[in-house]
Length: 139
Picture 1 (cartoon, helix red, strand yellow):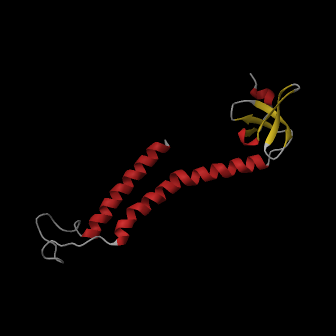
Picture 2 (picture 1 turned 180 degrees about the vertical axis):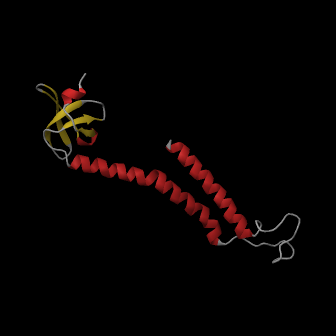
C-alpha cells in the first residue's frame, strides 16, 4: 500500500511541477495561436529560481512524510522498547523464537526458551515484548 501512495504522490508532484513551470513561463494563460502580450515576439523568459526549485522541494516533502518520518518513528519505538526491557519479560525475537528474559546486559540478552535452556542473543534482535503469557501463544 505504501508503494501505491508513494507512486501517486510522486506523479502528483510531477504534475504540480509541470503546472508551476508552465505558470512561471506564462504559457498556461496564453491561448493557442496567440503571442504573449509581455514579450511581443514570444519571449517568455527563463523560469525563476523558485519555480525551478519548487518541484524538488515538493518531492522532498512527500518523500519525507511517506518514508523518512515513519522509519524514524519505528526506530524510536524500538529503542524505547529495548530500553524498557527487563528480566522476566516475555519476548519474540526477530527470528521468531519465543522466550522469557533471564538476564540482560547493554548489548546481550539471555533468553530462556525452555526449562533450563538459555540462549544468549543480541539485544537488538528482540522484535517485541509479548503482553500475554507464553503458554497462550504456544500451540
